[in-house]
Amino acid sequence: MKRLVFLGPPGAGKGTQANKLSERYGLLQISTGDILREAVQQATPLGVQAQRYISSGTLVPDEIVIGLIGERLKKTSDQSNAGYILDGFPRTVPQAEALDKMLQNERVSLDKVLSFSLGETELIRRLSGRRSCPSCHRIYHTEFNPPRKAGVCDRCQVALVMREDDKPETVRERFKVYHRQTEPLLDYYRKKGLLIEVNAGGSMEEVMKRVLQTIGDLPVVSKV
Ligand code: AMP
Image (cartoon, rainbow, N blue to C red; front, side):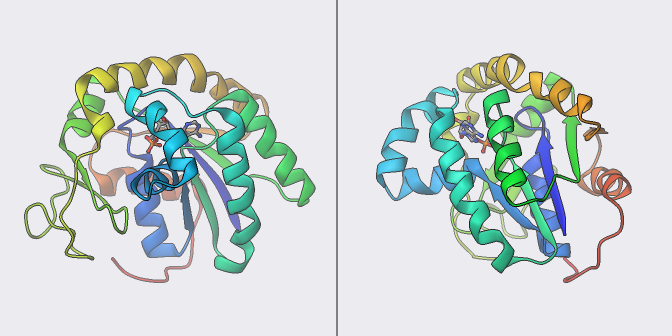
């Protein structure tokens, strides 16, 4: 069972690669961003709390996301034997420390932490064309990864949406937050010998090849 963390700035392709790995190899994609956005959509108490952070491009407080992941990880062993990818968590050192404790309690450990890197101009190009399915969370790009029918999810036939926090002002804030609060995690995981840097440039398939080289072979469960 693989336990992976995907790190990287907004737009680097963490979610896209996690989508693919989950579809092809049955790895569970655990995205705190998706969980939070769904809570916002449903206006649950968590969603109401999270909304203002998400729309301003800042981080939801640690205790909230740590609680959320704690609950989610408890359920994972029943859901996938292949393992999971934490996509967008941890994003701060306290979150990483809390994750370590949770894993220690279960007497398990992370296999690898992949850090996706890409220059800012390319990140912005990816974010401005990103569209996602509000129902299944599959990610598209108007130019690089368009759906079969413009604006509609291939799988759910639901209209795709652009994320509110992908607008330029919010993207700038998200980059700042990434450098200030999340980048220190690279050192945190490098010191533990878990960090692998992945060049996130090029096509989805090219990046996928690099990802598979780093995490090793996985049995295919579905060809997508
Ligand atoms: P993402 O979909 O990963 O880009 O996350 C979208 C937004 O959700 C972020 O800009 C944060 O406001 C919030 N968020 C997602 N994951 C976390 C996390 N691990 N810690 C704090 N806030 C988070």
